[in-house]
Length: 274
Image 1 (spheres, one colour):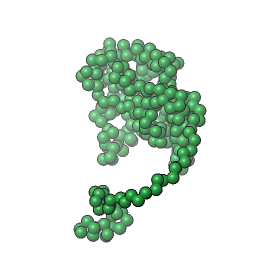
Image 2 (cartoon, one colour):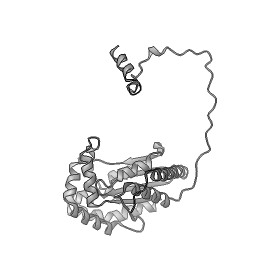
Image 3 (spheres, rainbow, N blue to C red):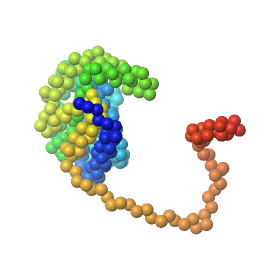
Image 4 (cartoon, one colour):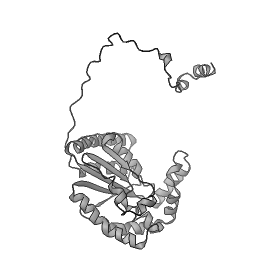
C-alpha cells in the first residue's frame, strides 16, 4: 500500500478528531459509558492512537488507564477487581492502554500466573464482558498488529533516541525473544474472547498514519452518536476597572524569559551577565 501524504493525513486526522469531539458531547449528554480496550504487540502504536483520540477531548470526562504491576494486595484480589474501579460512569469515556488481557498475554507467557489462573481467566472473560455490555457499556476492543520487521525497526529507533528509551522496557525485550510464544498466546486468546458481544477489531499497524486513521474512523462508526454540540458561547463585556489600581509588576516574581535567547541572543546574554 502506498504511503499517505502528510498533508492528506493531517487533514483527515483533524476531521476525525472534530467528530470525536462531537461524539464526546453526545456521550456527556446521554450519559453513555464508553470503554475502549487497546492491546497488541509492543511498539505496535497503541499509545499513538490513544493520543490522537484524546488530543482535543475534554479531560474532565475521559480517562486513560495504564496500570502498573499489581501490588501484593491486588494480587490477592479477584483478578478483575482492580480494573472494575476504573470503568466509566455515565457520560465518561475510558481508554485502557493494556487491560485485563495482560493475563492472557505477558502473565501467561512469562509464567507470572499459574496455568489454573490462566484457564479461569479465559473462562471468565466472556462472562465479564457480556455483563458489561448487558449493563449498557459500549465496549470496543482493538488489537494492534505489527510485523516482525517493523517492530525491530521501531525498537532500534527507540534505542537510538534518548527521549524514547523509556518506552523500551526489559519486558519488551523479553517479549521480543519470545515472539512465537506471544503469537500463540494471542491466537488462543482470540479463540476464547472474540465473542459476538465484544469482537476483537484488528488494526494493521505497520503504517502508523493509516493505523491511526483506521482506528479513529472505526471508533466513530461503532458509537451511535448524534451531534449534541452546544451553542457557540459569546463573551460578555469585561467589567470596568472602577478605579482599581493593580500593584506594580516588580512586586511579583515573574518567570525569567528563557525564550528571549531565541529572538535576540546578544541581548539575552547581556541581561544574564547583568
